[in-house]
Amino acid sequence: MALIKKFRIKKFKETKPILSLEKISMFYNKRQILNNLDLKINKQEILGMLGPNGVGKSTIFHIITGLKDPSFGKVFINEIDCTDIPIYERATKFKLGYVPQYGGFIQDLSLLDNLNLVGEIHIKEKDLRKLKIDKIIAQFEFDSLLRIKAKHLSGGQKKKLVISMALINDPNILLLDEPFAALDILTIKMLQEIIVNLQSLEKITVVVCDHQARDLLSCVDRAIVLSNGKIIASGSPDEIVKDSSARSAYFGDEFKIN
Image (cartoon, rainbow, N blue to C red):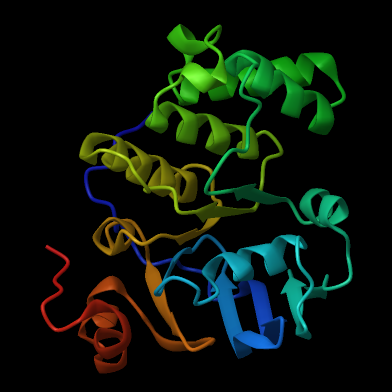
């Protein structure tokens, strides 16, 4: 895997949105989670979502993937309204990959068997499937871990496994829910490197949400801050940290990136 010496290498060059949420509202038991939210994510952008617990970050992911239907509003991928398209069709037709905060693999299967399981779902041709899995094994340096059951992998190895499983379908958009949670500093740096490589080498649009604000801001082009069901700030990492609304609602006055 190529080493990335500087995480925020460049701004994304295309401004054409690959994913748009339009006037999205969401209610749980009469409690409003999202309030008329608009969001556009550009092709090959790394976008970070920040905000306190319960603000709707995971809900946005669930609405994008089709795990949940919005109470109001529409989801567009490549300018096509996919609000009513079911989960599996949305994932395959629009090349969506999703890495959940917890799980995402079968505990009692080996790392290789987990990869093969997903490969058999998405790639019917045997030789092509083997080529894809071999590429992922090399890309993620899995050679020494292939026969180890997923439940015996370290936290960082499990994260790498779930990300690699999401890549078997060659996604155009990859959603990462809390990828840095409960990981050590070196493992976080490794995942930051993977995220940037997905953008620069694989040309994938990546959306990340996490409570580790510094770690998230170290590897994104743009970040948004959510509060009371709305986006209250959007900008580059430097811009978002200086935004008065973001500081008041989320960062606080003492927060610094470095």
